[in-house]
Image (cartoon, rainbow, N blue to C red; front, side, top):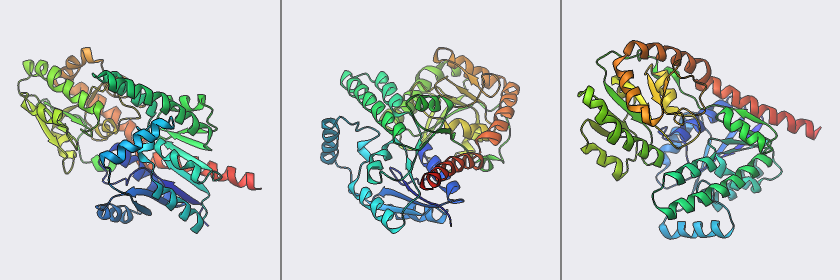
Length: 406
């Protein structure tokens, strides 16, 4: 009989339009090939289509209806988190009593062999099943995300608040390391961090890409491909900062040499600041698109001038699988086993415009980089390989539980 895995995440992993959704979805599907997996997630009243889509793809999802987020309700959550010295950002914001109740109900129906906690914020539910072996999938080091976001804030009150949240998140990460039987991280850097915090077992399970979805795209791009593309959720502050940098500082320098060059900003939920970038010459704010492949095909380079954020960048992996050359800052490609000049071009912001311009004007070099990057994506980052690594980590926890029982 298959071992039973009871999993919980902070939101329904559908549609597959964010890095978090993609990782949760693909790992749940992979683990379901070997174990009996039940995934519990909060949902709203408009989630029926998402729930059905997940079930159609083989994910056994139990949605838990929670109330809407109102300003008054969230203010109460912020206050309660502050009084208990716990972070609201990335943590208490996702604490729902209805989810706790459902986890306990599921545990009575079928006692789980492993509790799978997806994201740090799911550790708010660890106390619901304290005696069940736990695996935590830490998509990011949230304390680092909060600290970097604080550094980018112009208003002192937000900087102070986010720095305090970063310190509180460090405490929760320490707690997660010590109260888990195994942790999954997206990079070697994150792995070393959680090992230093005392985690019993840490496995690198990188973010991945469905290489087959991009198999029809060529490797490299022709000289006439002068579009620069940025892909990401446009409601996420680090992405907003990155595209503003591209539109205001990089594009004028590029278009002074290549007047036909255009910046394509692709991603859901563009903020007013992002929408306003459409007034700049050569900038197209496209928002959410039905499929990103046509835009990756028409682009000459993916630009990733991130200075904040964490985890491994699915946008870069998608470009690798699509055969598209990439120019990134060091922060932008953190967590990926890549080398400057071998798989992509890595440049600080001061040299970023020159690096992008060179990539557009040297398509033969871009093709050589894209070839090696595509090989890397297939060998290490395809979701099929990534999923097997996650399954091995879960298997280790199951084996430990059997030995303890024996």
